[in-house]
Image (tube, rainbow, N blue to C red; front, side):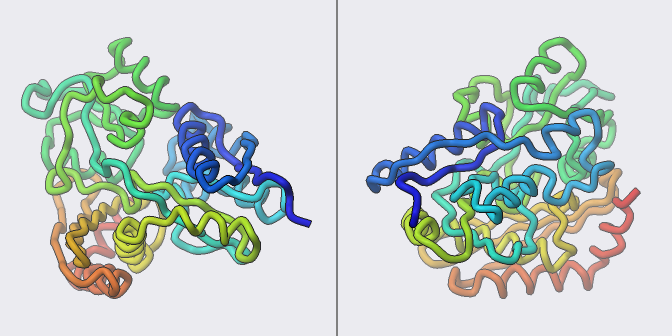
Length: 302
C-alpha cells in the first residue's frame, strides 16, 4: 500500500531545506501530504577536502538516491547541477520546476574594483578558470561550506571576494549581499544551475504526482545543457559552462570550456527548437571537441 504521505529526502543545509520545503509546499497545493527527512551525504562529511580531490561525482546526491532505492523516502530534491548526468537504474527525474536565476555572482566587491592580486574564493574549476580569463591577476583560493559559512569567511577578511550562485542567495533572502551579477558571457553557469531536480523511483504514485510540478521550458533548457555536459565527459565538476535561454519554443545555448589558468577559452552559441534540446547540446559539444575542448578538459585533471 502507498504511504499516506510522501517522504521527501533532503540534505540538512539551510538552502537544501528551503528547496525541500518549496517542493513540499507545491505538493501541498495538490493536496499531497509530505514530511521531510534529512540525509547526510558524502559532501556534508568531507567539508575539508576540495571537490576535485573527492572526485565530485554524486558527492551531494549518492546517499539520498540510495534512500530512494531502499524505499526509505519517496521523493528526493536536489540542486540539479549536483546531479550526475548518468541516470541511476530504477530512478527518474520526475519534474524540474521553473528555474531561479542561473547566473553566478561576486560578493565582497565587483570585478571593476577588485584589487590586483585579489584573493577570490571558489572551489569550482569552472568558476576559477573563467574568472582567470577575465582577471588573470586574481589569486584563486579554495572555499568550502554552506552559504552562511562562506559569507562568514568573506566577512572575516579571508577573501577579497567570493563567487556563488545567485539562485541560492535569492532563495535564502540574501540578495543584498551580491556585489555584481556576472552575465553568462562573462561567466557561463554550470549546467542546470538555478534549477531543482525532483527525483523519484521510476514507477509509482510519487512519480505521477511530482510530474505535475514540471516546467516544460526549464526542463527543455536544462536537458540541452546536460546533453552538452554528457557529450563532453559528464562530470559535475568539469570546468564546463552551459546555459540555455528560452524564447517562445526556441533555445539559445551558450557554452564555455576554459583551461585552469584561463588562458585557453572556447565559448560559443547555438540556437534551435526546444523540442530538439538534446540534439542542440550534442551538436555544440561536437563543435567544441573539434576545436580542442578535450585537450583543455584534460588539462584540468590534476
